[in-house]
Image (cartoon, rainbow, N blue to C red):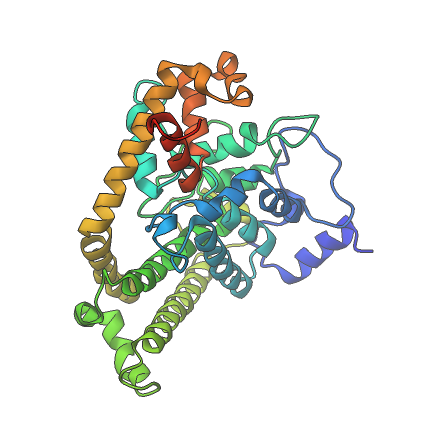
Length: 384
């Protein structure tokens, strides 16, 4: 049977010196005897997978609300795609794949229903009461709200995974500064890999969903350098009329180009800086995991295109505004009469205050659960 000692030896042999090895973990808040044949980060990953917050991601919006169609990404499918991309990059860079996977699977557990519009609505509603940030809420989920163990609250995850949740950053996600999680330090390379894997996933898969929905047109993409770079070569491999197959091939190639460039550029930076330990990574003032300047320049038009043509499309804006109204009205009715909350939710009001408990409850809802609650509370013909 594989032992903890052998896990340490395996990591020393196969991981890069700057990887975050499990023997160097800063540990857990609550002392536990570690598992005999799983590393601390494998155990973290498994705790995330078995959490209620992770399962609920299946019915939380990425861009399109769940009932818009079965094809479109949800928070869960997006999370799995991020994990796959991140593991590939981590393996190529000889980083800790178990920690990388655990961070990837956990990075969105703090998300609200209805995507970023839900987060924006809760942040506005909680103004003056601590606000709402999905990274901070993700930490609250794994530290407090998950109730699965008799000896401690939350999931009791390692310091490194908790840091990865709080310091997750992207175009949509702002890192939080938490005392006790080294706010002045850079995150591990494993966290940095997840951050960029998140961007690669949602750029390319939002493009896929946008084309499938008809909100984006293939002809609109002709002005994008990255798309044009691949279009002619891919078109030779499939019939002109087979737009669906062409879309798959181009998006697959877009992901491959970005991942390959990222690995090469990051390796070059690591060699140039002569990094020897994970501590040297955290002491730097600039992130290392990055695209080359040339590819980063080519990516910008694609991201601007998605912002202009998809995220600001009138149908997406309508969905977002409806979501804000649902969440606002649910929040206000619960705060006005908290005895409408289920008993297992009400019991936390004395500890956390009414507004925070209502915020936690709504943030944990799936899209369809929020819509069902709305019907029960506001439709006179709906059973409560």
